[in-house]
Amino acid sequence: MAYHAHDYFYNVVDFPELEKYQEATQDNIYACALGHESQGEMNKLFPFFQFASGPKSPVSLEAPSGLVDRILDHLGSSQREDGGWDDEHGLPYWQPYFSTLILLALKRYSRL
Image 1 (cartoon, helix red, strand yellow):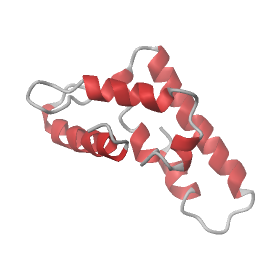
Image 2: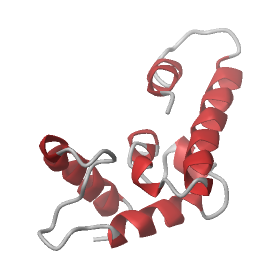
Image 3: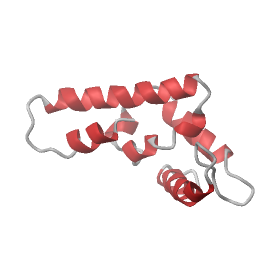
Image 4: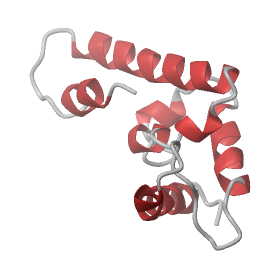
């Protein structure tokens, strides 16, 4: 989901036509998210909140209508009975990491 571009273009200070690159980066993030959503791959969308770190982040504010809420709804409803979340591949050693990131996203968006 374009983390290299996001990390660079949202932290660089002096770059020609920076806004154009930031917009292209956001468009790519949205296209990836909407593509996974349309294919029923909601479990691949947890990285979205690494870009949309809170409700006032640029990626969150300009996201397509309802996208943020749909992803948050999925995350909230996919919690396991033991309190954790599965990673997209079902690998047990990633579950603490995924669970931490998802809890942080839910907290930042006042879903906890």
